Length: 110
Image (cartoon, rainbow, N blue to C red; front, side, top):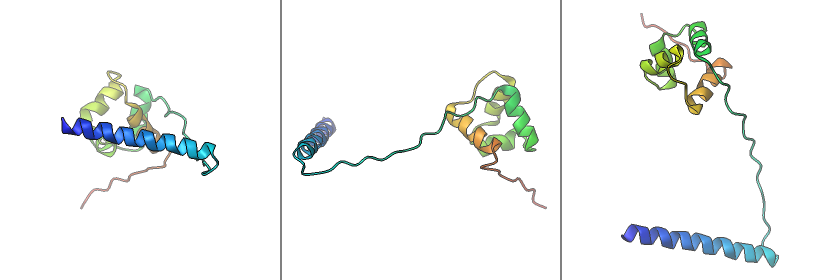
């Protein structure tokens, strides 16, 4: 019960601080600044054949591609078969690999 009270007190204090800043701004005591952040377009939509084609073009096995993307080999298999679609985060990683921004090289030990 105590943690809820602490959260409520923190919320109240943050709200109070924000309202005080509004009043200070209106009185000319402080100036506000803003920051612009460029938000990228959503990732490209990769179809099952596109994912398989990219993986094969990079000479990755399904298990290696899965390790690069931090997913299971079964997940890659399901994407390539069309049974499942990649999440937005996975699509972004696939796009980064496709564009060559991240190009992991696989080496075999001798």
